[in-house]
Each structure stands twice: as structure tokens, then as C-alpha cells.
Length: 459
Image 1 (cartoon, rainbow, N blue to C red):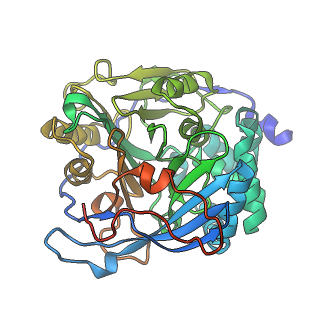
Image 2: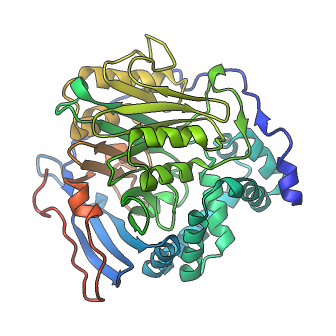
Image 3: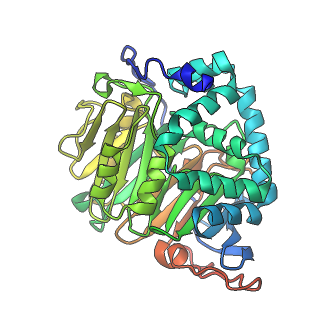
């Protein structure tokens, strides 16, 4: 109770003076690696509950040249059942990896509490609380303040993960509290109709997050098959249950940008509310239409300054999101309004790295305008996202009409080649429903097969 009382005063915080991010950046380069079809191997199973496989992403150029030391492996995990059952399966399938991820991540975060760069990535009130109370106490207080607004199934899943892996429950909770309030620099766009090659929505979600810590060493694709709601894919880390990036069997895709450079339209932030990683995951699991997702954003208790994006097969909406503000944008009313560095583009909504970020937004606009009418997931990966230099930790592109997905991860510290995801090979999923959402649970310990696209058929 004392910890909660420490964060209750001043629930709404005023915005600082407006500043702009990154005046000038040198942009260059395209991505000429082959797209690598999904090929899962070395699977282990828990009958009726889960399957863990390895996906290898090799680094081969179109001319046949291969960077042998740049090949990396990604975890692919299927989970089935109730929230607790899915958490339990996740912990049983990879107990050592889950324990290592939390041990290394918590040690790293504790070493960063005096880092100015780390503290700047957090809301001011949380950075101040960490300085005053310490990391554990500040995050415990945040948990106490947000739990009322958070559905119980998240904590049930964390409890299952803790019970199966041996990681302390509160250690799992604290990491998610921090992730749900960290305002990372990221980029997004949604393009549809006349802007894309086939008229379907093509959506970008580029995550620019910490590349110095252990996160890049635990890349994971998690496919949830819950008892209630949609099947859905999240792109993230081993043992992480929040929604950063992903799409659902209802063919809704999510994007997010943390806002460190807002303008006055955002109004105030709040200490109390639902962390965005839970909001976005609930959209994937429970919503079936774009309006469902937007209504969810309007009705939840919102917290920090964000830009959110949600797309379906035929269109995309961007959202200015804060405690005080919820404004929805299409290509006719997109903000901020600036014809020089954030010009309107027909059937496109986009932001580069932040709300007020001229260099990155301008570069994104250049690529989107140049390829207007010809945008595909592959074109965006090679010639729009790569030159813009956004997406260090991972990049995901969804074609929500054709059900194609392209995903790239930052290199683990032991892997060679370019470190940043935007410059690395992409995993290509030709049909996310057939290859991931419709995969049945294993029926026995011997049921280790999984349908995939042909492993030798590069797209």
C-alpha cells in the first residue's frame, strides 16, 4: 500500500516543451538478401499443449553468395489451451532458455538504472520512481497501480510460466511492467488500395529497441491457440507474453511507436492504466474487426504517449494515443501536418521513429512515394525500410489480404553479418493461416511434424 501511495499523487503529468528528434541522419543502403521460407525443424512437443521448433534463417544474396557466419536461428513456439496452460507449456518447452532470459535481462536492467539513455526511454514519472525507490520497488508499485486495469489472463499465463520454468512470478511481472512503459523509437506505415501492388493492406512494424542487452539473443515467434478468442502470432522474445508485434487469424495487424517528442495535442500522460503490451495483445486475441480494435483503445484506461497502428485486409488506421487523447487517422487527416517532412500520401499512413521526427519521417515518405502503386512486403523490406534505418531489434511486414508475412530479427551477439534487423535476411511466411494458425496440437510425444512451405522454394 505504501508503494502505491507513492505513485498516486499527480495522476496526470503535463507535457514538456516541444522538441524534435534527429535533425540530420545519413541514410543509405538497400536489403538484397534472399527471402527465406519458413522451415521448422528439431521440434519437441508436449501432447495437446505445445510445440517448440527451431527455424534457421540463412544469409544468402540473390547472386548466390552466402554469409556463412550470418546464419541465425529463431525459436518457433505453438501454445494451446487456457492462459495458465499456455504459460505452463511455454515454461516446460524451454525452461533453461526462459530462466536464462530473465536472469540476463534483469541483471542488465539493474546495471542500466543510472544510464541517462535508459532513463530517457521511460516516462518521467517512472524514471523518477526508479531513482527514488530502486528498480524493484518502482516496478512493484507500477504493477500495483496497473493490475486493476489488466485482465487476469495475463497474470494467469505468467503464473503458469513461473510454475513451469522456476522463474519467480514477480520477476516475470516486473519485466512486463517495464516493457509496457518503455517508449522505444520505432516506425510504422499502412498502405492500401492504389498504393499497393495488389490493393491489399501492406503494414510495417519496425521495433527499434535495446541492442546492447540480451533481448537480441532470444528471438522468438509465438503462435497462440487459446481456448477463447483468435489464434495469433507475436514477434518477440523467449518467455515474453506481451504484444509488441503481430497479427491474428482475424487478419488484424498491430504496430506501435513510443513517443518521446510529442506536441501539445497529446495532452497529459497517466501513471495508472493498462500497459500497451497488454492492449495490443488483447486486440490480437479478442478483436475481429478494425472497429473492435479502435473501440478497445477508446475504452481502456490509457497511460503513456504512443502512436498505435491497426490494419485489416483493406485499410489501416493510425492512432495518436495518450491518457488525454485518442485521435484516429487515415490518409486524409494524418498528423502532424507538415508538407516538408510529413507530407500526405494517398492511401498511406506513416510515421518514422517518433511523432516529431523530420529526418526519419521524411525518408519514409520518400520511399513510400517512390514505390506508390507498387508496394509489396518484399519491396518495402528491401527499398523502403532498409534505407530508412528503422527496425534494429526486429521488423515485421504483413500483407493482410494475401496472408503473407515477412519478419527479420537483429543478429544475436554470436552471429556475424549486419547487426540490425532491417539489414538482415527476412523470414517469409507465404500463408500465415496454413503455416501457423491452422497447425493442430501434437497428439503424442512422436508428433513432431509440422506443415510448412517447401524449404527449398525461395520466394
